[in-house]
Length: 311
Length: 311
Image (cartoon, rainbow over all chains, first blue to last red; front, side, top):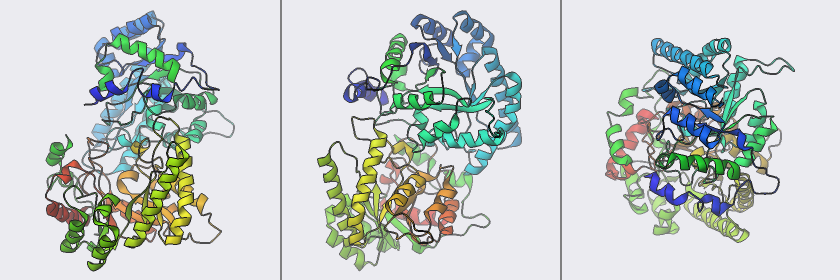
């Protein structure tokens, strides 16, 4: 459904054309091409992980962030070897999380799976493990209970992750995913968890063992966004993901937009992030039936171009 | 698309059956049937306004909240006469708002349309005019600018509404509507507007000329919800709308759920609202391809039953 509609609305004559290139405005600089990173969700329907690693090398994209399904296919050791061979930075591993569950055994199993995700992230030398924390336990309406399970799960995982040297990046997800994917829905809510797990002594900097992954798609609407990003600070800003919000959005899950095709002022968000001293990479993560139906090398070219012109 | 899926997932064996009736739990009381109000969006595909007014009388639903398209069809004077004849309370008029526009002329036209909405609300004796404030101006990415236009529009409308004795109820909409319907997306954001337009002297109660309409669908996910509802207080709590969030939600616009079919803990939200001294009605507003395809008298029966058991 969304494919045909998007095909009409994207590309050089899409929203970008109508609205102008957001970076080509006074006071706005283009990002360094060396900061581009590919989240494997973006072309994961077309390519396996080996193909994506090789494509990054071929297209001179210097970072990659694998999802675990792709990692399992290839094997973490082989993936790490290939990624090292091509000199790529692993900006994150997607994903840990999904902590809420109906009983103690299921919660323990989720935690064990999270420990294996930490191990994989360590094997890859990933800059963080991204946590999509999970939603309400199916068959209940207990949002507060789910949020408590998330807190407890992260608290327990944190020790293990510290031991492995893997920072945990809580990713607040858009409120439309609150029920079934992630009940952490704002940057401030994620930071409240960080503060509770790692209280900040006066004047002391956070360790960076736990922090936040900022994804433009999930946070762009937040009326408190500038203050929330400033509250993250440098040490806890563990990842920066970009894509765009399409108007209309035809599917809650699989209709995310390429940078420049939607309404998010990505250069302004980048400025907020950079103002905190963030010098990390910009990870392009697009779940989209439209982009999954395109030639993946063409998608890589579009990503590179839009990263420059529209982010 | 959503109709067939919902038909399978709703009804007596739907989520309500799986999760239990939320009001039939210790410490939870059923709401008075006299507090039920029908928002005309709920059965607006099947009935015109005259039919809905008569259906409310027939089903002993004591409140109604018309949308303006239905009001225009019937005429505000005739609608007011019929509503008075049947002794219904008008819990709100939907809607004013949509303030952002590309140029001054278009913004002035929007404001003029809002004044006519105030007039209609006065004619009906509506308890408030609900404001769906509008989104980003098409062709731009200027969310901050849209929010400023919303503020300016409400500020200008407020004087006129005060003169007409019509309270303005800002309705924060779910963040997934930020781009194209309403860029006020949390209760706190709405209250910041109220505070700026009507600063509160120490110890003085707000006038109630401007306040908030709380719709469960839009706010249930908010991690700050209890504090935000408490911040509204009695005078500014101008409306309370209910429906449910379905899992999965198959359409951003037209897949809202009947109370009890989703994951919102409506009795808990009602308790928060009642704790502020709210004694107003509970307006059922469901945009749903599924419920629009059903016999409207059966929908009325379901609303009455679910209001009792699940809200």
